[in-house]
Image 1 (cartoon, rainbow, N blue to C red):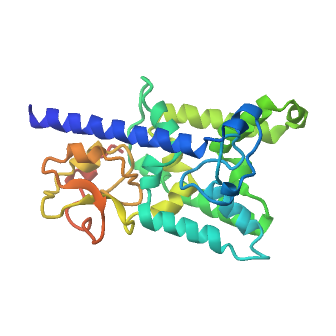
Image 2 (tube, helix red, strand yellow; image 1 turned 135 degrees about the vertical axis):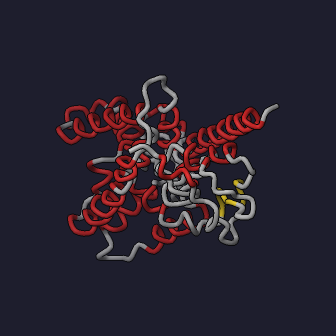
Image 3 (cartoon, rainbow, N blue to C red; image 1 turned 90 degrees about the vertical axis):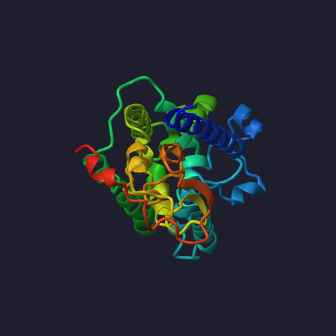
Length: 298
């Protein structure tokens, strides 16, 4: 078998394995079968805990809380008590996995990957998409932090979150007739925004993850420090840039803030310098910036 054929086989095998993990995470996050059947929200003790990925607390199937929703709720009441638990939980997730959570443990990320497989024209990454990737940090600061602190409302959950609309808002309305007369502009806005985001994700790889997700923005701050994920053997790396070119995210080097540790670069590396594992020392400081970075279309 040729080297290119072997690399393609490795890439497909890695992709399938990741999708299985994503599916299992989505099922585990939402295994409250009675809630799904009745359209009710679980009030079990597990709701005091957070899952790593974006998964609305109000989803009928949800067995635990969303870290982003919990952060906003904690900030709303921060005047009365400091949110030690949720900040500690987010720090722990970030230090352990960074944005590997986006690539493996986020149900909405899984949905975006599935939409990306639709046979429609795809928008290639460019300097424009790289610039738009900074937008999610503004969403984090304004909607997930400033509005909860200053306006005492969970801004992201209330005005934007497509995962909440898809997994909680729409199912609740469909299963509870008493809620339908209460619907107004805000619900219509969020359904329209959800539709727009899903369409965009069909034409642009993980558009929500790349441009709007504040949870991904938070985890990206820990990507260079995370204990587990993609790592690069600097002794084997030849700086060819294939890892950067094959990646659909707006990375400049492996394991930077935009890397979701999806593993596509592993099969593309001609020297097998990239792998998953414990990142107990800095192995990504050399040889990870591709010579092909400037070849990204403008």
